[in-house]
Amino acid sequence: MRLSTIFTIGGTFLGAGALCVVAAGFAVSAIEDGSRRAVRDALDARGMHWAEVGTDGLQVFLAGTAPTEAARFAALSVAGSVVDAARVLDQTVVEEGAGITPPQFAIEILRNERGVSLIGLVPASLDRQRFMADISEATRGAPVADLLDAADYPAPATWRPALRHAVRSLGLLPRSKISVSAERVEITAMVDSGEEKRRVEVELARRPPAGVALALDISAPRPVITPFTLRFVIDGRGARFDACSADTEEARERILRAAGRVGLSDRADCVVGMGVPTPQWARAVEQAIAALAQLGAGSVTFSDADIALLAEPGTDQALFDDVVGALEGALPEVFALDATLPPLPDEGAPVAPEFIATLSPEGQVLLRGRVGSEQMRATVTSLAAARFSSGSVHMTARVAEGLPRDWGVRVLLGLEALSHLTSGAVTVTPETIDVAGRSTRQSAGAEIAQLLAERLGGAERFAIDVAHVEAPDPLANLPGPEECEAQIAAVQRDDKIGFEPGSARIDGAGAAILDRIAGILRGCGEIRMEIGGHTDSQGREEMNAQLSLERARAVLDELRLRRVLTSTFEAKGYGESRPIADNATEEGREANRRIEFRVIRPAPAEEMQTGLESIEDTGEEDGTATASRDPAADEQD
View (cartoon, rainbow, N blue to C red):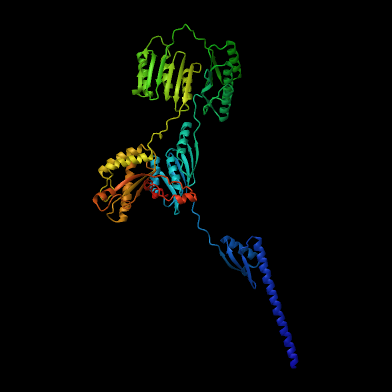
């Protein structure tokens, strides 16, 4: 074969090979660009703009910083759905996460007749032993089931005040659920009566912790009223209820509206209770009140299904007959009406006998007027001594003849009515029983009306004028925290609490001093106080700190044994760090070995200063006030 032919054939193959290489290069570039664009478009469609896409031949590289591990996995899944997942190489990293959010500390406290249960998450720094002791003290030794978990995170500043308020509330509520968090205390409870409900709500809302929301849901069961009683009066003093009962809120509103239409202007307390004789109660009351208004004056008394309407003496007989007849025809069938029109009094009749019992605000009872016999006189005196106190009863009533046969019953009933009052008087005559005075219980007037209506019958005349007065605040006369602190300091100026050498055991003299201090604290009410233990500088510093803490705790335990409310007290040991005298002398060391009682005061609120004030105000606060403020006292568990 000629050489030229060989070169021609070889050149042809070489050209073809080069052409193939060039064509393959273009094909690979086209595949790389297509894969990159397809994966990029798919990631952009999902909002994954953080991902960077690169190619190397058939391989697709994903790079960039993913916001989360889930976003990283999602990007790889999207790329794997566009090209073969085996061709996708992961070169992404995950953004470093922020610090772990502290857990939400919260406790559910459940209390019933079986004891107290605690469920929730608390800070690991919480002194669980002391917390359980505080609950046991507040609930008078109720068993406590501790189902709490702990987390080693710092607690918010309001956690401890919220927890302290919850424990104090738990002592007031034998049937309750209290939810506690640093921001909120929710109290759900049931009490025995409406009056107890109002008292508890006032007490719980008296000192809410600063910065903590307080939510109350206190309920009371509907009382059982027997007999179901209502008494409405129209006389010279206007229209009023001596007693009011309803079976539903709707019935209550209907009754009050009916009374308002005939002249009732004052706020009336109508109790919603159980025991109504018929669902037609409100309708019958509306009709009876309207009938009494037509007569102009008198009283209408309901005792279950019996109605007694007593007109004012001198009411026109024809009007009385018409009104009573219409009312009898309109009342539901279950009700029985007894209507009475008393005759006008005979001016020539002899003066009616009286018995008068007076109760002073100080609790002194004076009994005067007439009784039927010596035996009756002794019985009245005995009942008065039982209802009030034997040393406060003064009997001046005389024995008289010719009294009505039921006189003794009426006198004893009058004393029963007087026992519902804080102060006042009861006047008993053959025709009526008049009760007037004051009571700290809102329901006293209704209770007296129910008592008289049940014992006398609705047709008998009686008058009730009882004003409600607020009970004196038991905390009003308590000494202030600073005064208590000063009184305890005065006790320890002459005698201080002593301990056996090198131990936390209180000596005999110290026990007597604690008796005096406990008496002061019992009269101070609930205050926040720190019991601080201090030592001299002899011995190692760590041992002194531990000994001072044990001594402070020993004092706290002794106060608990003396029935001092210590749920708001703290025991702290300062060792030798706060001397008040020279440790180089025996007298100084003796002075430094001490127990101090100090009120824990809230931290002062920071005030914003203007630029001029910050330049001018360069002085320090009063040294005394600063010394009394202990930063450690407000550390939160």
